[in-house]
Picture 1: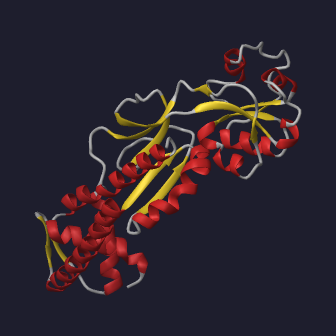
Picture 2: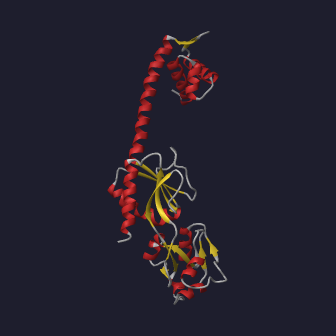
Picture 3: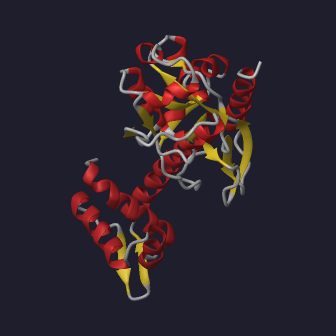
Length: 292
């Protein structure tokens, strides 16, 4: 059958089940005239009448009954498969919302370990700076950075963080003590805490030159610093790879604990699926392992 006739077949199957175009229209969110148009299109394509039309409504013709039985069986089988696929997604799929910086520098490098333990779970990672809606079309869980309270969500503490000045080796060689950090070009992001708070914690005056460049994402700040653009006040949880391969090194001065922390969140009106709970448990083990 041509694909163009599939909407007409669906309209016919509903009308045959209800024996009423108006009820079919309500089920399909169409008008009764639209259902009638679909049925007429199918009748013209097949060259037979599928309904007998009378003042009180419609009734299936013998040909219509044959098609209704076949269509009902076929569409029912398709719906059964769709339900199975949806259930498989619910049972084995996990959609995670996470900030791009945390995804790139902390989560994604660790995902292989989760996949090795749970090879049947399918992950979908959504990276976005906006606060997404946790509805039927939204993520199963999220990892958020904040104070731990969001309306309509249940949150579980994952890990804290700290801010520490980092620079590429060629710039770091010019720094002997915390006061020397002010002589470097300073890079900032849009986090609520920054260089001003760090200099205060170090007992130093915030330099009059302030920051030279501002980047909207923490990951971009790390990468920009690694190219030699300047020193960055980095969240320690995000800087592991840059420190491990020597692209950035720590500068003298305090590590400033952040007021915010990372939390795993999910909607408060339903419990996580088994697959989502397995991912939450794994996240908590990964975070705890960093403290050992």
